[in-house]
Amino acid sequence: MAMLDILHHPDPRLRNVAAPVEAVDDGVRRLADDLLETMYSARGIGLAAVQVGVARRVVVVDVSPQRNAPLALVNPRVAEAHEGLAEFEEGCLSVPGVYETVPRPARVRIDALDRDGQAVSIEAEGALAACLQHEIDHLDGRLFVDYLSRLKQQRIRKRALKHQREALA
Ligand code: GNR
Ligand code: NI
Image 1: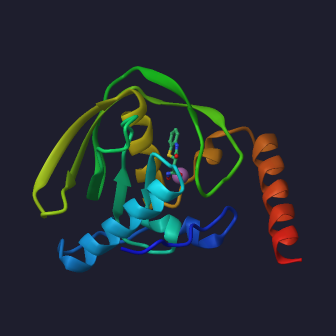
Image 2 (image 1 turned 90 degrees about the horizontal axis):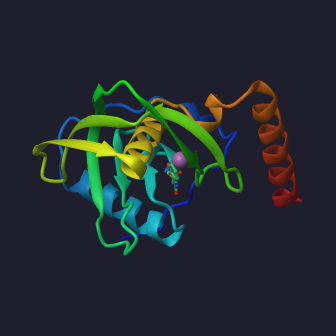
């Protein structure tokens, strides 16, 4: 397993739309394992391949308090979104230090392939629903800050660019 570097907003690679995985092979399983190691090390509850510069449709999540329920999904998609919205305070490892409430469908069904290439269907609500939608957004080049007001987005971008300059100096 290997720790991967997480890209930070506004890195343009975070806007790449990830390509579907054609076959769940050992390379995809290794990518999923590396994503899990990186996610746990960064204390996140999810991570998408796009965040480590790999434009393929692979995500990992673990919303369990014990951090012992890893889930790796390939080609995940929102197959059904129930009507009601829920607000959840979100953060993102690619937008460090920013926590904002985002409304999303409260209950969703996610269709995907598991690490063996088997089709799986997950009914999610609460943190899992928010996290899976957040990860699928990454695969489409979307960040949770895209849902915030223009003013908030401007502030976040300016602060991120300042941090970037300070890190390079
Ligand atoms: O660690 C994370 N926490 C989180 C909280 C609420 C909704 C989504 C998330 S995902 C985030 C990790 C991350 O950036 N995944 O892409
Ligand atoms: Ni994120």
